[in-house]
Amino acid sequence: MPTPEEQGTVYGNLHAYKLYTRPIAQRLYGSFSFRKKSGPIHHEKIQKLLKILALNGTLTTWAMAKTHIFDTKNIRAQEKDYRRLLVGRIARGKRLPGLLEIGLVVKDGKSSLRGLADQYRLSLHGVLYCIDTLDMTNKEIDIMTEKYSKILPKVFGKWQYLKSNIGNEVYRLKNLAGGLFMDNIQIAKISNFPIYELMTFLNVKYQNNFEQITEEEFANQISIWFYTNLLVPAKFRSSGKHSSLEMRKWKKIIQEDSNIKKWYYDFVDEALKFYSSRFNKLKKLENM
Image (cartoon, rainbow, N blue to C red; front, side, top):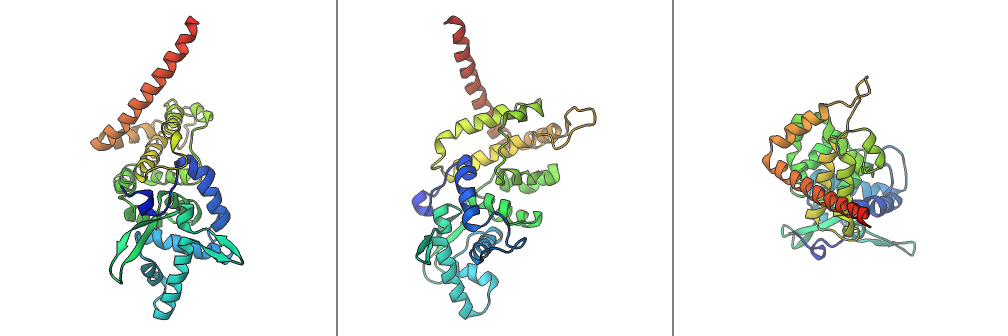
């Protein structure tokens, strides 16, 4: 996996996304799509750049500029503008941080097509921010999952398999992108499944990664959240009982993919060991 030095930035876990990256990105680049409501031109430029990376994957700044502009003279000007947006710039005597510094974009190797040049793509924080803010259609999200399947293999790499089993429920990822972790104690009231316990342990597992996490581990945290969230009832029966539909579909997804099954139940085993240890410590109170 690439190092932070190679990627040109650092980023943290899901709580870092919720409490740091997302609020800062919303303040600097907008909390809604420029297509929905007009805002600062800087927001529009940033969001267009992010959309280009979301739908095209890894690109050089020259390739980014060519996606929308075909006049050579304008391409050069646009390329310089994109580079400033990526690395930061000075505006009216104030430095504006770039997308690399905020952690929404990472470097992804080099291209030698037009001389040696850095390539860029969205980070996983950037993927979440795009889903949350850019008002992407489901079709556009599908395109992005194909472009970024290698960095989120257990979700984006399984996207068509998941859609064939649960349909539009795959877009529950929008909840995570919006900062909804489903780790509130109230979640225990709407399901008989240990969703709250698993989500709580997921936070514990990655609690030391607020300031920095590898892309592989962050992908793992997102993936565990995704599969656990599928157990949350999408609707309730008129009797007030929770629908078993989620569990039936969830079982099918897990049972028919041996790699996902082993990976997920390894996490469940970790959670069992953690809660067993905590329970033993509680039991010690009886002898005090």
